[in-house]
Length: 325
Image 1 (tube, rainbow, N blue to C red):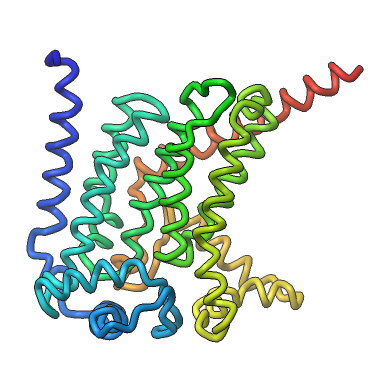
Image 2 (image 1 turned 90 degrees about the vertical axis):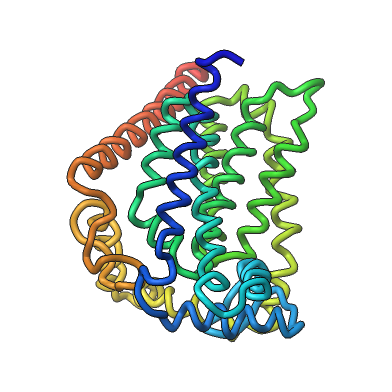
């Protein structure tokens, strides 16, 4: 292996080590003290696992999927109810997202993009914040990165005899399915890939024709994996109290009051550059996601992505119309 081939691997290993140090350093005291969410997660819900009360979904604290708590129970069993038992899992999970970001960036674009994205994540405030508290949210980026990586690898791999690369689609389905057992927001990941599939059918029909079987297989396996959770929730619908809490703006909009929904949309749009979450558990109150320079690059990226997406769809529609005529 040449020095040119070794350099990116050395850089990502260095970045991963620095990310681990930043997430581990003084993790027992920063953030200071214990928040009720952390204690409920570890000392109540994860304790159910240690007590042998196995379930796919726990109704405690407005409802929690089980996967993170199974992993957290292992840490509690090894280290006890202290900073290591409660927060060390998040340190490991947050660190692993750095090399996975590099892998996905390299697969989507090239090695340079992958390294820049990994470096940005390694020193990102929100990644650091969530990697230093014992909450289940930190597992979702890891599973989402793995889902997108294997999906994209399957999409770009050459098929033989029109047979899809089953392993890659299967792994994408596995990690997407595991996401359902991690955090409520993971239920949106299939919608992202479904939207991309529709886009693919519009702008690159030949590729879609070659890949639709594998994509269909991926969604089918994901549905099978998620089915036990939804059957469990159907039997105890009251356990998903968190969904009812978050759905208030949509419920109000359905009743004709669009003000709460409008307020939430505006808050989401400005959080990237102007005003972030005011809850100190998740943020330095009102700190935006990006600084001024990074925010410019972020919105420029959104604009470029929107331009290429709309351009591809318009060109495809124009081609179909002209061909028909």
